[in-house]
Length: 108
Picture (cartoon, helix red, strand yellow):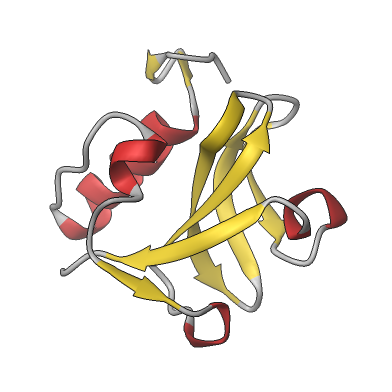
């Protein structure tokens, strides 16, 4: 993990998300989590599908929408963690439950 990083030697959550979505779906996303939060359509948590983007506020990166990941199913999401690098975490993790902001589905 590297805040602001965009290469395989170090990337942040939005660069990680951009790389996965580009490779899996051929979609180019904007650079920041705040910009990504403006895309697609809103999705309620109970209707999440693999590939949906999930957003969090007030994380390690600062106030507002500051973290993004990709829902992978079974209540889990893939993201770049400041402490663990690329990882999969449960949406029910206490740290993320209180910071969950919403989800967006980008047309594929």
